[in-house]
Amino acid sequence: MTADISDKTSTIVEVKPLMTQRIDTTRALSVGEVARRSGVAISTVHFYEAKGLIEGWRSGGNQRRYTRDVLRRIAVIRVAQRAGIGLADIRAAFAAVPAGRTLTAQDWGALSSAWRAELDARIRALTQLRDELDGCIGCGCLSLSDCPLRNPGDRLSETGAGAVLLEPSGR
Image (tube, rainbow, N blue to C red; front, side):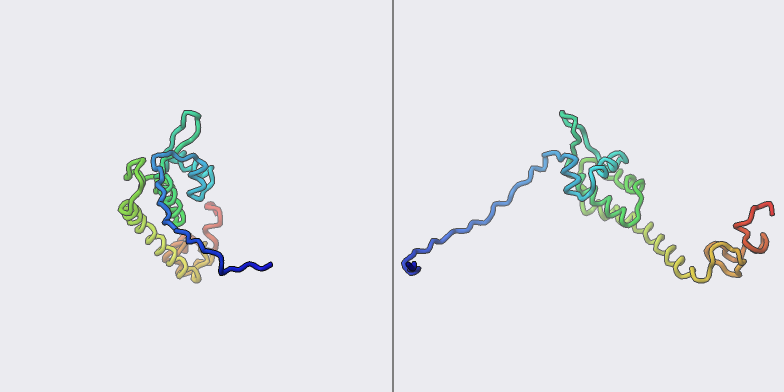
C-alpha cells in the first residue's frame, strides 16, 4: 500500500513572532540566584556582602534577598579584581554610587578612570623590574656597582662587603 502524496493538502502554519518577556525587575533575588547569574559561589556573595561591596536583606522567612543591581556590581568587582584592584579600593569606589542603583556606563567610566592610574603605575614598575632583573641578584651580596632594584647606586657597599643584607647587624 502506497500513499499518494499529491492527494494530501498541506497546512500552512503561521509563525508569530515571540512576545518579548517582561522581566520583573522588582522581584528580589535569592543568594542562589545571584550566585548562579553572576558566576560566583554562594560563599563569595556572602563574602562580598560582609566586605560591604553589596547589600542585601533578610526576608520574612530569614532568607537573604538582593536587588538586581548586585549582579552588575558583582560583574564590576570581578573585572576589577582581575585587574588587581583590591577589595578596599573597590568598596571606596562604590561609595560614590548610591546603594540600590544599578551602575551605569558613566559610573563604570569614572571607576575605570580612577583605577587606570594605579594600573599604569603598576605596569611601569613591572616593566622596570623585568628590564632590570637580569643585571641584579637582588640582595647586594656581591656589592654590585649597579643594582637598580635592591641596591640602587651600590649604597650597600658603604656598610661593608659580602652579603650585608643576610648577615646579622652586629658582625
